[in-house]
Structures are given as C-alpha cells and as structure tokens.
Amino acid sequence: MPTVVRTGALAVKVYGPPREHPPPHVHVEVGRTGVVVLRLPLDDRPLELWRVHGEVNERDVVAAIRLVEAHETDIRAAWERIHAP
Image 1 (tube, rainbow, N blue to C red):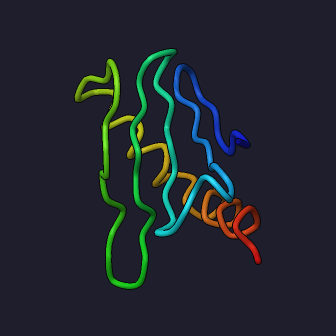
Image 2 (cartoon, helix red, strand yellow):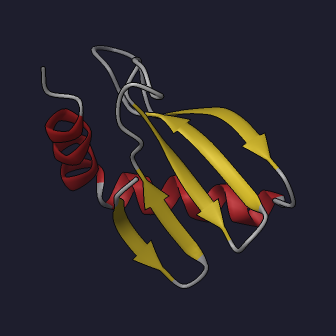
C-alpha cells in the first residue's frame, strides 16, 4: 500500500486490488492505531467521511480531511494509477 502523502502523524495510503475496491477512497493512518477512511469526491458528491477506526479524535478527523483536500489531485492520480485495469 503506497503512502501518497505523509505529514506529521498522518499518512494517506491507497490500497490496491484485489483487496481494495471502488468507490475511490483513501485510508489516512493517524499515529499507530487510528485510521480515517475518506471517500474521494466523485461526480457531484464531495469528499466524505466513510469510517473511523481505532484511537482517533475529532481533531485528527479534521486534520485528515484537510490533508486530503490539500492534496486531492495527487491522491486521485495515485488512486487511478493503482486501480488502472
């Protein structure tokens, strides 16, 4: 699973097939025990919080969302490259 963006305790990762699946989404690791899963924008749907696992507080969720928003173009390109047929 490639790390697409890393800053501080946050690491944005895109998992590839066969384990992963549409819709386009990323896993933002928060420290060693937390994960925030965000669906990438698609058509008219905005970036969306999908799941939160482990020890993650509200501040971590907001930081994960802001990080993905700031790097959306590169993250989307990585998703498409990893999931290309």
